[in-house]
Length: 361
Ligand SMILES: *Cc1c(COP(=O)(O)O)cnc(C)c1O
Image (cartoon, rainbow, N blue to C red):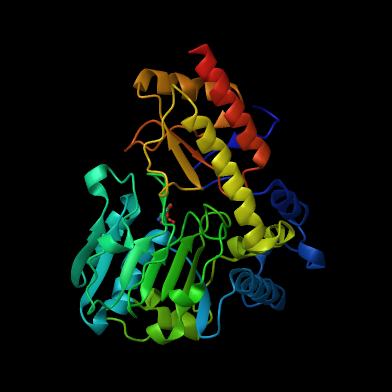
């Protein structure tokens, strides 16, 4: 530690690309001759409006967002969307379908129950969320106003490998921890949302992609600031948007473009995850409880089966220059979050460390 940057395996907020931090640093007191920091600018200024428009355009291009969809830059974190989605969408039939595959979808499910009749379309709680339900296991209600799921379960280390077929029922998806890591066919979704702090930008920004025709049917008591229509009509600037985070997202998107865009990133991130799963699967000491076919490329969970040895692993990993490898308090063990900004080298070094630890214990 000290002057060295560490390999930070935090689940979020998490690493940002070094190039991005350096560029932000070089512009921090005087953004491109404006005489001020992006942090100090009026959100209505021409300079900021250009940052905003460019970032939105870059995001649309990289994610291939089709016509008829809006990209919103909001606040309140991904968790605010747990309320905002039902408030705006459930009015259609009063019912919605939820798949609960982990902590965050469970919170969203419980929150939605305040606003309508919620059908538990699937749950992986029977096996402690170590798998993703198959299409056949989804009990879908054709009258649901929407179907909700979480694409990547940050705590349990599982990831949906398919987009559910809902026969026309709009899909609402929490992509907080795997957005920008793999190609997404946006046209299959009604709403995609993601908190920025895992794979996009610093905490404080929530990106929402919404099919425009879904907005405008909110429940009558929907708070002004939680109405998608308010934000669509004012292009996310009804009030002050998270200016600095939007600027940072723009820098991250430039970096992503330089890595081959999302297809380029998909190859890189998949190779990183595979390397780690191979080491764990070939180990006699470490195991990954997640079923192959449901494993996340973003959050790799593993353990020794002995809590003391897990604690020893975490302790030694810190001494070796890695941080935040301790698993979430609700599941224990270890978790390596390897989002886009984690360099391949960091994963290679972690693999070497895991092998050496096994040899020594
Ligand atoms: C981190 C996370 C959240 C919570 O995000 P906040 O921005 O802190 O509200 C929700 N869903 C998923 C999948 C996450 O990883």
